[in-house]
Image (tube, rainbow, N blue to C red; front, side, top):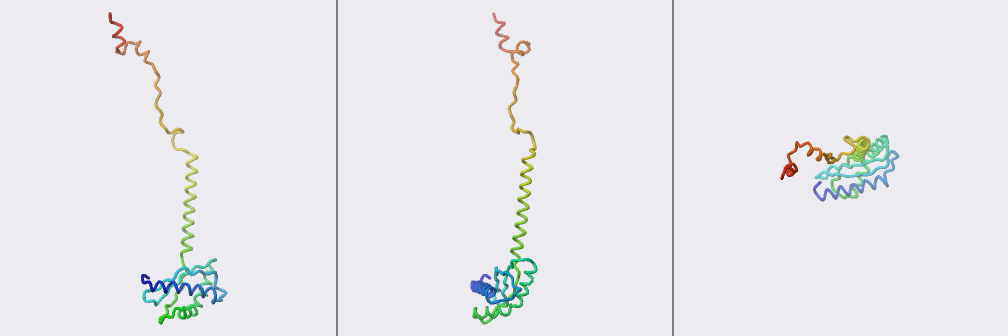
Length: 163
């Protein structure tokens, strides 16, 4: 749908179908429907209408049946409002976006829970010493004892022997 004319046709079909579902189609099987997108082929022969339904699986199935039965009425209204010589054939396709978004939210929630568990374990058990920073070693000062032994050769011993 890189053609701007085809994009305008798709946008107009989306508005027409949404208005028809809201105002003119009175099928009791029709649930709370939102038309999310319309894609028209380059030759304007086929139009795929993507929709979502709020509710459980049986509501989605009944809405799909209601849309299939109302397809002819909706197509004739699209033909009347568009004024085109060849009207695209409508195909209603349930949009997978809500299910994909729900699965993504579940994956993100699990990842967040696992991150919180790892953070809790990190606080509880620290791998290593209590104080991980190295401190300088303290050496006891025994220099006086070393000089008394006479084992150290130092300048002090030489100075004491002088006349």
